[in-house]
Image 1 (cartoon, rainbow, N blue to C red):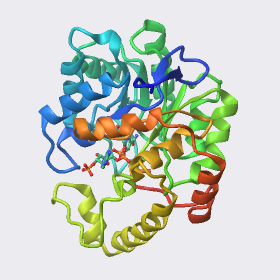
Image 2 (tube, protein in one colour; image 1 turned 180 degrees about the horizontal axis):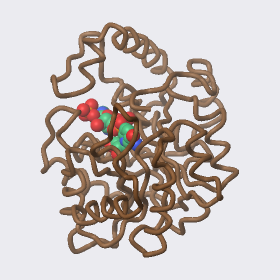
Image 3 (cartoon, rainbow, N blue to C red; image 1 turned 135 degrees about the vertical axis):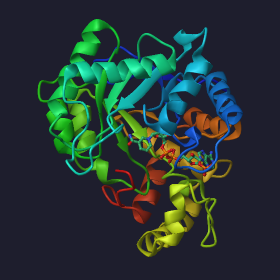
Length: 327
Ligand SMILES: NC(=O)c1ccc[n+]([C@@H]2O[C@H](COP(=O)([O-])OP(=O)(O)OC[C@H]3O[C@@H](n4cnc5c(N)ncnc54)[C@H](OP(=O)(O)O)[C@@H]3O)[C@@H](O)[C@H]2O)c1
């Protein structure tokens, strides 16, 4: 039996070969997702590498830079084993004016250089605009990313969004390399337009949220609780979100009969997104080595069969489901 994940191209322009499963490093930063411990994170990164994961996703804003710093610690002395994707955009975003602080290319370049310092590297493989809508500084991001690529500080660039319009704006000249998007059994909306667009345009697709922030691990019931500093406590305390949470629990319960023996629902959910032909990699967040191993193992399993796909379609139809915050 194979024990190492396959590598495949990240779209048609980046020249990067990445593992079909990557590791997301948001929840490990210790902000927004309740307490996190650095040792657990470093062990998750180590377990990911052991199984052949080379792709890691972070952002300048996760934990106020702590996520990038931790990844930097893990990379020390072995940068070549990592394909690093980070994001820029939300630090000091002006909510009232609806615009980012990056109103000149020099500021944007300086912001990416701050990420390079935290990561302890002189280049990142992928830089993504973290702001998922078009804002006054969108042209600055595009121009700045092009300049960073020319100078070798980034190898490829793109945007993280679930909307076709901002992606088309980024790809107006046909040189946007990657898209990051929320996609899962609970959110199949990307299947209608944006994933086919990426396939046609050769844009590499990085799927975040394949477990719908843990929902598709089938580990919650109506009595679930979350720490105050975990944004998921809104699933319980906010009446609208709680209604949605209870509906999601019903969907998860209906999915149980679709999960083959010997697999967890989390693995089945990751297989679902990996089976879409537009998808280059899925980046489930992993807080510890156990989650990282289980998630990576889903990349060693076969693509969904026709019958498995039809079973899911009967529960959440193609193109169906709902957007999941922060999409
Ligand atoms: N671009 C953006 O705006 C944006 C937005 C969201 C995410 N992202 C990126 O995408 C990555 C993944 O997305 P996500 O973290 O939102 O959602 P996700 O991958 O759907 O869910 C991850 C969470 O599920 C739980 N989990 C993971 N593996 C598990 C397993 N095997 N068994 C049981 N529970 C498991 C963990 O939380 P608990 O253990 O606490 O349950 C983990 O933090 C992030 O880390 C980040 O890199 C980007």
